[in-house]
Image (cartoon, rainbow, N blue to C red; front, side, top):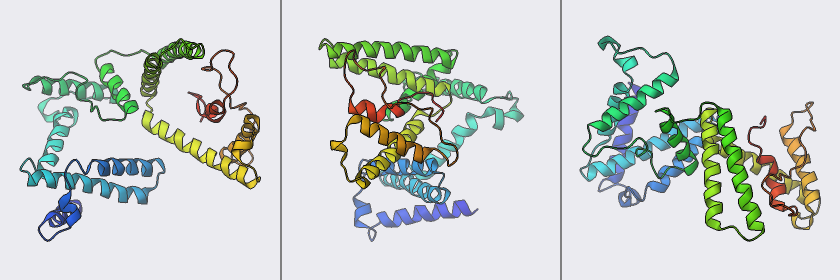
Length: 313
């Protein structure tokens, strides 16, 4: 099998790099020093996926697998485990947690929907935890080092697996509106200098947690959605900068109204296919969280078009 041959070759290359006549840099690495590289390769894989760049994805997956082999080599040298142990563990886990596929001969029930599969998966995980000396809770298996938005998504998924969930996405929207209203109170209090940073942080956290759960209910992975929104804003803002430079002016000397007009122009030029021009989107300003009786701000002007939750984009 070609995959097995290439994987074995990669393992042998890694062992050589760590060997006495190998690479000084590779020999100096530890599992801790590799953490930033693992994270970097993870995000490069995600970037290739977002761009649907299949050639790039092919290369980045190789780099990602290499980091796993590198870590396993270090652990093998320390006498903890080998990459074969990791592969066996994941293969055994997949078979064990898919009885509806691999256990049919033993009489396992057939599952007809992804929802049933998710529920069964969590049930099997709970059974596995029951045999451990130190039982885990439902949420304890979620890595604390995950990006917080993604961790919120997984927390909600785990809680939902035992029925602790909103019934409909609309119920989460109502919760979000409740959190927005509470945050608006904080903003208004801040304008009157009666609020505290701790309360503002708490209310913002509650809002973000609710938004992550709405994303889950809509089957949207929130980190991907936010990453794409970041890219969209970056693309638009860079076009705005280029347009301002081409006009012979600087952004600092332009008024908010002038920046807004230019933003709308470049945004429509970037986002609207030729022959489908539309003027349905209004001003960039977004007033829902502005303190009462406060004037416009550049921050509002810049991010308003990005702040709409369930728009058509």
